[in-house]
Image: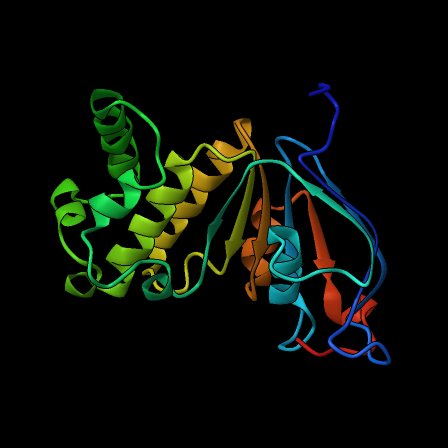
Length: 207
């Protein structure tokens, strides 16, 4: 990959659930390694729809989306894990490292996230929302993404832990690019290289 090649490139994207009511019309975005862009806007402005398009779960009406290796962190951590399996089992399903290397990486991120390693041996329903969200962030970082899609990652966390988590995500920009959905303009202003307000650029919305 070229040094200057973007980790995410959206070209002339048009999409709507109804062709006469477009959420996106000729939308463009480039995201380079080391950059964090925040997506803000009122409910229904197309924030979550954009993530679905990037992940390939929705197909654009026109335009192109090119994205490098993706991992995601979603607002509701309980929807990110299967309820019947231990957290560590669900991490090992997607992380391809030798056991020794994986445990070393897990320890590093658990320390950064103030996450007790023993919690990974539990099932999702045995953890609080904040604990499970930190497990979701842990798994996403262990996947070593080049593009990290982050949807309200701190909504289930108390203020102190939330701040520490965001500092960790910003630190991880040395290795990837981040696209962040947030309603918190203070947070967006603190961490973003660019803020895109979909409520201002999209006149006809249907998230």
